[in-house]
Length: 145
Image (cartoon, rainbow, N blue to C red; front, side, top):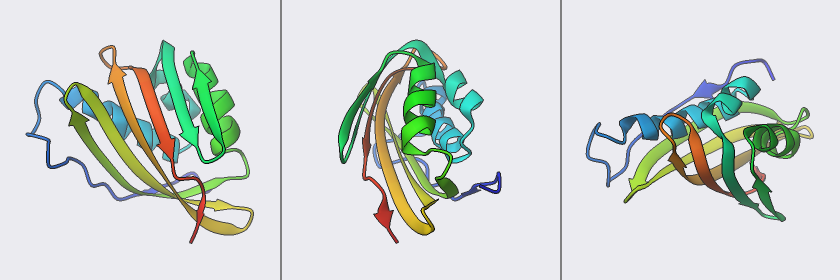
């Protein structure tokens, strides 16, 4: 990775009603997507509460973790986007809210094994203030471009 991720953001949704009490919470989802695209381990860990209730579903597996270090080191940067996976671009980020639950969708262009792929993940989460304490992620898997 060249250390830079190009970012094109689309934030908000039809259910958003401008900045309000959830503005700081919604920002956590966007910050998560940016940190993931940069493969910034420290920023990802700083966003996740300890303990965290984390579960995710990828095309071949169900994932669970209870600490931010597990989520980042063993799952996100350990398995999903490892050293051979080069995130070239954060194509989009959309944030929103479903009643009391926050929502973020982000799409990445990733180079893996010499080929470009799109990966989209959708997450629902809750915070304990500034940090994500509960998160559920659904992943499209690596889709060839």
